[in-house]
Picture (cartoon, rainbow, N blue to C red):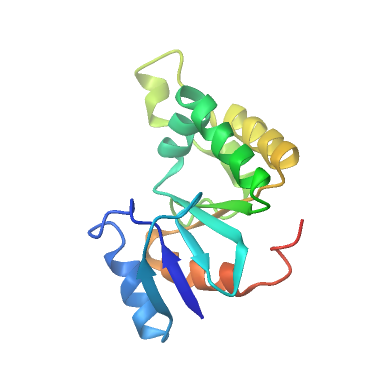
Length: 157
């Protein structure tokens, strides 16, 4: 497998991901992608967008909602299925687990989003834009990217 990594990914942030690619013999190169952060050359119709945690997801779907939805629309226009891999913790393994997440910003702002509300928003986005939210801890991100890019069952529309 050959993986294209988006050029906007910061080298320091993906050091462990690239190390896992090397460990598993996955060829990779950096170049700008039309959407997402990772794509296998074996299937240019499937891309993964990596998010560093649920706080980033909250920021994307709430404060940067228009930009976030436009990227999903652009992916659909190009015929690309874009999915999200959220690096959070071992406690969040599925979208259902997001309901139990305690947003640390709730203590600071009454406008912060609860885990239950984020779950509802992400569920609606999944259904509306043919996407999926996957979760992992930071230590296993490289492995999960390889698994997702190799799994032919999730790439179909």
